[in-house]
Image 1: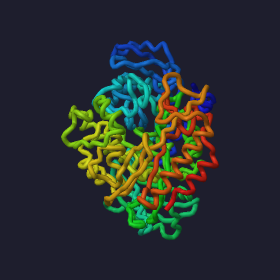
Image 2 (image 1 turned 30 degrees about the vertical axis):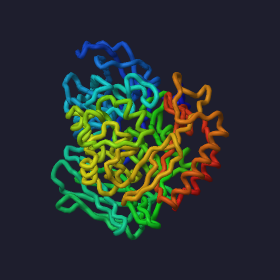
Image 3 (image 1 turned 45 degrees about the horizontal axis):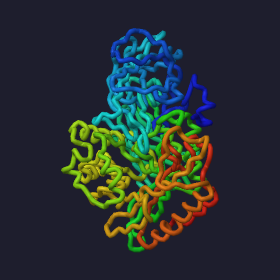
Image 4 (image 1 turned 135 degrees about the horizontal axis):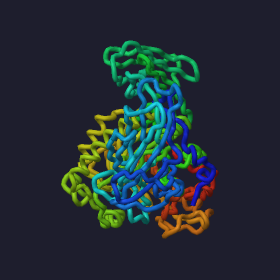
Length: 575
């Protein structure tokens, strides 16, 4: 099965837009496209690459041109020959890998330049062995999908039901950029909505001799400053203050110059908080009560797997949900390419961002019985029961927690971090909620989405599928129905081959629209006033493999619900 986006892309140069809009330089040389390839059980290079693969699509995906299974003993061998354009090298050349699952060794012109582990976060390497002429880039990858150490998300070697086809190898863009010898390593952007000011911290490798930080709005200069001794600057935005919201997604441009390095970014003036409203704690956007009406978004495509086939495919998902009246996407157990967050920023879509789960295989009792039986577990003592017996697994999650926050910190659309989902690999959630708060105090935290609540975080967060969703919250936290619905309607000719999975079978599109309408009008809308319900996440944006409970089919060809009805329903979800 392919999407219309996958059918029309140029496989010689897929996903060639600049990958990092939040940290953009003028230098960009993409390496996506056709690479030489071989897969075997031999970790040694033999200089033999009889096959071709399309990067950045995983080995299992149709768009890669391979579409084969990978075992824990398989070694994926990639080779790319490239020559830099004349004048490209400004002193240093960096190679960026936006995502490689799971263990990668990188060689440039016969010299090993990097070893990286973990499948969802990017890494960057200095190309010290670069030549003026032809260069040989080799990447060897191993992927043990079911390992209890590394984050794996919804991947499982034996796919089925709510678990999906693995993603192995390079699945994020590979690209080069040239930088001066002294370089801006990172920036941290902190908008102060109440004071109408912006703080920017610059992490610079070298000695700062000159600096200039300029904020503009639609080409008009708003504020300008230079770095202080601590490499920070505070800009006054009050002269042209434009708040960001899904209804009015105002973005400012930001230019950072330090010595000879120049980075372009953007920011938004917005504030996320909990506020009091009619006797309840509710989500607040810019100091006003704001109802989060969203859908679960897993970011899978039938042709690209975890990799969106194109920029247009990402935009289509976001715009379609906005057209239905939703203002929130819960990015479920996946980290997207940074361009996806950029499109949410500019189009106006709030994001609830999940951390990627891992750990040992989860016990069926805890997966399939817990929705019917209300029991709890202490997650500081049940490491083995919840899949975290291996201390390396717990250490890896904590490391990735910090790295994920750093990676996505400057995305204005992200309002909430979800720490754990339905107990998958859950451990020490109260301690980790505190750690997450210290990493980022500007956003809210859903500590335990679904069940096994430990009393932490900003939300009492429930998943209700098999009964009428009635909720009460007697705590200082806000009330969130972070998953519900999941009504299953397969559309012939637009479903993934295999068994079909959902939470309630529906016979046709008209019935689906009516069932969803009844669900919202009878059970969701009344609880906004009575219980302070502040967030609802319908399952889900699109079908995913066996799951046929999407508002869209897996190939994104058919919208199963009536658009005007959904717009009308969402118009009533407000305080």
